[in-house]
Image (cartoon, rainbow, N blue to C red; front, side, top):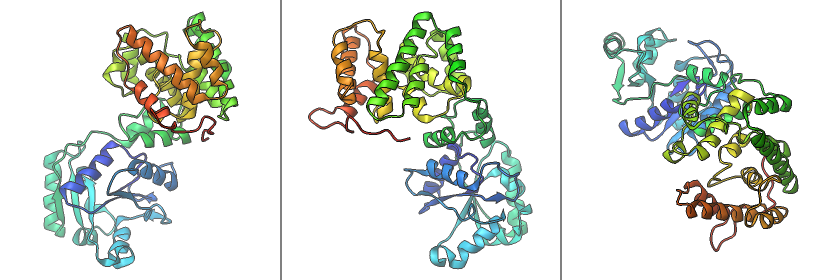
Length: 401
């Protein structure tokens, strides 16, 4: 399956998974183009588009990524790729290939480079595409079969209507694409700051926004969490700048009423479960993390995750997540509660032990009040402090960059 993959999205992956079953394929290859022949230059290098395709395919059985086209100098033509594959340079000449396309490409397929050769020697599997009405696409297939002897197979599948153009526009506007693309692709785009997201504000500018939106008490708390997160990061060999920024911004959506947070969740494109949707105390973390891109220009996925899960924790939580979670619970302006001094003392030497102690106390408090406990918290506890086993990572493990 070729294309620019700029970026890859859920419709691409659904095509790949559907084709595996519908056509009884051994594998589907995602094949990002180098310089595409029929589209403007993507503006993102082949190497980066290849990396995004690899992120999308990671962990998906029988879907792999090929660099045949991305590594080729000059303009990429499908016919050259197929000549190389069928000549035995790849697969020893014992492999048959099917080209996966959307129905919209049928309308111009006879204008591709060396189209007659391509249509005579290659089979095509076609997926419906909203931009090509069924009747028009079927007529094009019949025409190509008559004029070129094209071998065209139809795959009956309803794909989500997603375009890479839409994803690029959303990223540029600071909006989430987590509902539209695999999480690993969103992370790569955020980390590399692809597609020109909003500029990152200075700390002074960020504090100015918080002063204008949060209550004085909430602002004081946020500044205290910033300090505590930075201190815990320093003590445990974690990136202090990331911890401080996540601590500063963790409650940036706290001022919004629940109804407004729900509206913002829809506008920003945030995915969440019903438990968070129905709880303002949980919802603000998810919405706040999404707001970081648009309002503050923060796209570092480590920071976004630390803010997103600062009030529940999560299975697989990183040391940075843990430091921010704990800083929120034990910052120096917190009103005393049972066990807080013990947690503060333990946090100096054992970040994981302190976080586990804090989570158990928070979970017990929630349950004692007859409120539902979000499942991420027991999952986090099982991850960082499984009963009768050593925690998943040592107390002073270093956080990756």
